[in-house]
Length: 113
Length: 300
Image (cartoon, rainbow over all chains, first blue to last red; front, side, top):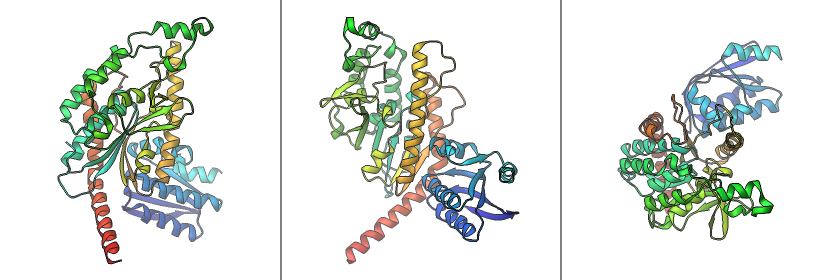
């Protein structure tokens, strides 16, 4: 899994590439944790290049979501592929995450509110 | 079919409800077998129980497919139970017995299940088998781990309104999907580490033109919401890994589309192939962790 982090104004965009699974979930959670500890809680996960997420991946996203919201921020998901979308939907996670078609839409949602 | 050809640990396979779509698990089992990944335990719910009962026998996959094609046909629900219908319409006059209420006769389904599974008992299966149903008196998920396979499956597929509840060990049982459409919790409770779960959302009605379709629509909505809630909880609660296999169907699959079974099985195989490399790496790492643990124990 590859992670690339960039910032636009006060929002951090984490671009994830590959699978979020048992081997990589901690790496992703730690990357988000570092961003949150650095003071940014407006987060976007760009999942456009993620081909799969297992339960371990779901747990890492949930941990980040809770940490960000606890501090008044959010983790918003963008550009999910159908395979990831299916697992997110089946797990009911689509009901608790704010999800957008692409990164600009996720960015716009922060700017709108 | 599910013999391990390598020293990799096996997985627990959980097959949720999903009518004929559950046949996709035969494709999943084929891909697992080709990769040398064994199935240590199998859990089945509703139509998934039909396939769990077959996979637990380690059958030839073509035979398993043919057995289901012969078992699962439209005739299963074609014969009305007129007495049940009358008792629903005029309960005071006819008397209403919840334990035997089902709008379709279950004679044929019982006959076919007995034919396919014969005298097989759950406790004698080569692969440990768990079939789930729901206690009609309190909604509890019931894990059936002994007794005749056909009876457990009959209880697990007691579709509300269609088939009557089925009594096992003094409990009136209805379809497993009523308590959990994808019973991953049973695998977790039995100590599974790596769980491969294959599940489906219930299809929604294209047009609601009868009370029956109205009831099916409501049932699908409730079941899909329950599936998501339980799946989310189990995913978060499990200490290890749940790998979900959700085959993608470009064709609409109806309740009794057994003619589409080859297509459904291939969709299952395709979805499993996408996960197989990861699964092998994961099992290898589990094996490494287990042997490190045993070394520590032996030193201690």
